[in-house]
Amino acid sequence: MPDPVFLITGASSGIGAATARHAAEAGYRLVLAARSEEKLAALAEELGGPGRALAVRCDVTEWSDQEAMVAAAIEAFGRIDVAFANAGFGAKRGFREETPELWREMVLTNVYGAALTVRASLPALEESKGHLLLTGSVAGRRALPGSLYSCTKWSVTAMGEAVRQEVEGTGIRVTLIEPGMVDTPFFDNRPTGALEADDIARAVMFAVDQPPRVDVNEILVRPTAQQG
Image (tube, rainbow, N blue to C red):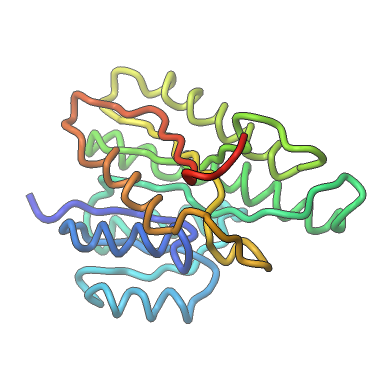
């Protein structure tokens, strides 16, 4: 079999880019999706260029983009073995903070976008008996004061389990990755004592590297010093 194929949304930076680098090192061919075409193109070139890493512009809130992303993956590589629904972003805490427009974009990206990635990738994953991963959060296990972001990640937590139950018997594995505080472009003021994106990428690869009979359903990763 040719080298397996790893699709990542939100691949242009942070956890997505770090996971892409680890997956490339492990021998995967890559489908890198995000809205930032310039960053994607640079990452794809770094990780092997045509034949090894495909950059696809994708707004995860648009079904047509998601369909095109999967179609491009199949056309280029013939299969998808791992799909990582990773795209997402946050907002300030407080139900009187931010704008309704930003809220709408966040909910659509974090929840609807993740669901569309699941929907688009499932047929290919069923054919390959592949692996679906979703980026949740510790904020999807405990509500944070005034955090609509936390609410979106509670939805992703439920989504991961709902999908796992739906695909039982197909050979597809499902893993919810739940980071604590990570030092990524997510934050305007970079935190201290936080995890690095590379730490989460290693957790992703741990789940993916298990034998087909083993499905690591959830990985919660906190910094050693994080409370709560």
